[in-house]
Amino acid sequence: MVVHSFYVINRSGGLIYSYEHSIPKIEFEKTFSYPLEFVLKQSDKGVQVYFGQRDGIKVGHIILSINGIPVRGSKIDFGTSTTVTSGDGDDNREGVSTSRDIIEYLQDSTNYPVTIKFGRTRLNGNEKLILASIFHSMYAIACQLSPEINSSGIKELETDQYKLYCFQTITGLKFVALTDPKQANVDLFLKRTYELYSDYALKNPFYSIDQPIWCPLFQQHIQQAIEMVEKAPLTL
Image (spheres, rainbow, N blue to C red):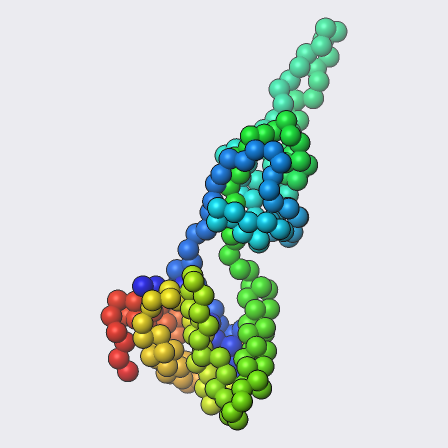
């Protein structure tokens, strides 16, 4: 069992703490023939799968390497050319880069068969902030859709790969954990993290409510709590 990551979202939907404990490395390498079965598109992270999926490769995955050569954003460097001396003694340019645009390279049928490694990059800070805000809005929508008043909102979301747990305090603070679907005692873990927040953040005279948490002791005890819940049932 494993806890993948843990987050704290403030009352206005801002992400004030995130900790990635065990994020699985997702990579798939396969040899393809022409034409490629995916629609590719350039993004700020590189060349990304925009449409189509097979063999574990899904929309959102980016190209990491081609024929074992790591890519650099939307380009791939196949090395440098050698010096060529003409008959009159003039030398051509030495060390000219043979960098190619990835999408153009994969559109050329003469380059096939080609071995491509796809993978998924980790979320950056801005993406985490956006997702925290979206989840905060989803939580509020779930409360409004409830046929009963005073709904607790989203407590669990389950997929075939992970489960999302959310514990909201009476003041509107949200503690969120992404775990293995079979991980037990996550509700107890989240309540424990609330105690740690009260002990090491709220009691810190230099901490302001709803602001990012920069407390080494809080980080340390969160790590210990995750290790405890992964190994054995957590008792309060």
